[in-house]
Picture 1 (cartoon, rainbow, N blue to C red):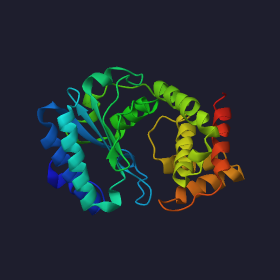
Picture 2: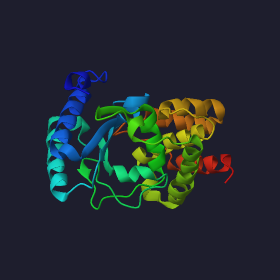
Picture 3: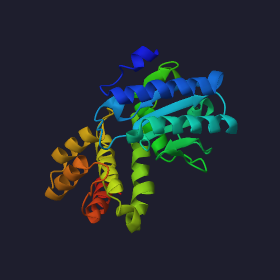
Picture 4: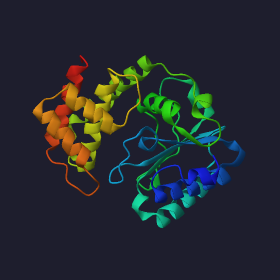
Length: 262
């Protein structure tokens, strides 16, 4: 995609400017080892909220990233963060290799990953979100550099995505129930609540939807007053605000586990 097209890609001028600069720098720094760079997340399938959403991207490489290239990318992200401080901690991206795309299971190797304003150290491995993210990218992602995502990512069956989503609930969120420090964060309470909405929606629906659409669906499908209240508060939450009762988010995880027959 050419810079002029990227500069009009979303309704947000500052985000478009970030995408133009980010795409340019990634292309220049990675060169011929870059297969493609893709916009994903809520900017591509709806539900983007300036107060709470991130700018999500995925870069696919022909080979693992050398340390020297990583260092230059870190510096480039630091420059972008200085120019756009509102988004400094809300650009989330991963750098994977083509070889990782051959497996439905989360790849065993870690990948360079930026979130919260910095590249994580050490590089993290994917969990069950691996297949969920690839399905969303293949279905809705936008190619900023390189071929369209459906030409790079193999077809993925929705049944496999549902199983990955179910495992994510059981292996990622249920074990966190006793982590009081985790649930003390209003950000995490809102994030977990809306993520569980998508888990429940995905169990009965094929299409990729935003957390907001999944939340509306949950309110209609499970109209318990405490669920409606929790989901409403999660939808209204923005960075810097307080979410409310952490126990309600815990209860929602247990409720989803019971709904899925676990």
